[in-house]
Amino acid sequence: MEQIKREDAMSLLREHNQEINHIRHALAVEAAMKYFGRMNGEDEELWALAGLVHDIDWETTNSDPSKHTHLGASWLRDAGYPDKIVRAVLAHGWGICSDVEPLSSMEKHLYAIDELTGFVTAVALVRPGRSLQDLTVKSVKKKWKDKAFARGVDRDVIEKGTAMLDKPLEELVEGVIEALRPIEREIGLGE
Image (tube, rainbow, N blue to C red; front, side):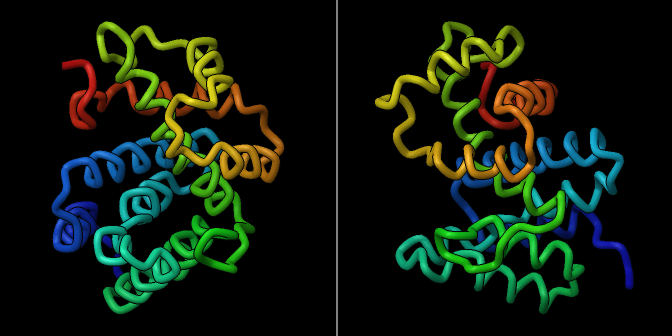
């Protein structure tokens, strides 16, 4: 099977997503997945691709969230994406819109960090410099306790994901911050 190129994945993503915030979220999850793939001695490019395309169908399915991940998985399968990526896309919606349980390390990481990238980004956005450069795990944990902050982020999913990975939340938060720092301008931060 031929290797999927990032440029092709980005073209497919943009074909189905026009909203800048959705593209930024895809870039954030891509960077975090690449980071965690590297940290786990896995194929970081494969992990990054899974992160980039994980919500490819969101703009099409957001009016009927029960279809989310299923339509995207179908598109990716038709486009020749590896089964590992297709399954990871389905598994990141486990218990929400999919019954595909995350089993592999890649699937578990995608499940845990999808929402976490949004939370970390939200914390950075309310800081004076709107930047990740000086963001600490402690600052993120402080906002975590404030249930009124970033209500749209499903903390239960993040907690289930960290439990699946058998890693402390702080470790994942630190990884997400590190992964996103180099691309903060691309995802609307540090401006």
